[in-house]
Image (tube, rainbow, N blue to C red):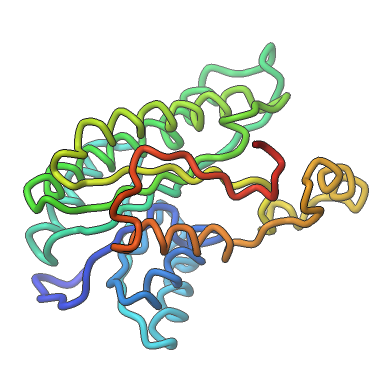
Length: 251
């Protein structure tokens, strides 16, 4: 990171922005005119690839490595943004992990890791962003949860608990911060075509498609398009909402 730099564009931060849904969100917000901070925790090379694509397309951004599950790192990085770049207008909490397994075999350390990243990480980042957004009397916090947090799924109890927790947390945040014109909404993607779905067998894909009324998988662009709307003034009257991008899988 360079030192103090006057950035003329509105600022957005996307956690877990180095791949998958996060990378597409980064590139979409850059096209929308934001200077985008690309958060990553370990794979700087992949984050740099996203930044290079963004810049090649005429966008503006920079890397911001930190672990969302470490509240000290989170506070330090958000303070750095405020002091060296300006007012953060949009936060997208996209970072997440899943460690699948049946409940009776769930290890304490796997439960802790899942909750630390998927739930506590989003809480830490939202708390840090809220401090400056409240003072500025503007801001949009967008949580990327999951359809699994709404409907549950065998073998994903910890992941479902973390993502479901984001729903209640975000509704509370929307009520707390609404008077300061800070909005908080949740997107719950269904089955989105990423590296993870690419590893599924054809039989697995067909079984999943039968549960989706539209009969197709979603794309990362489908999620990014909704993020774009929630980050824009067009959604000024939308807060505390849980919006599914799931092809009708859960209604």
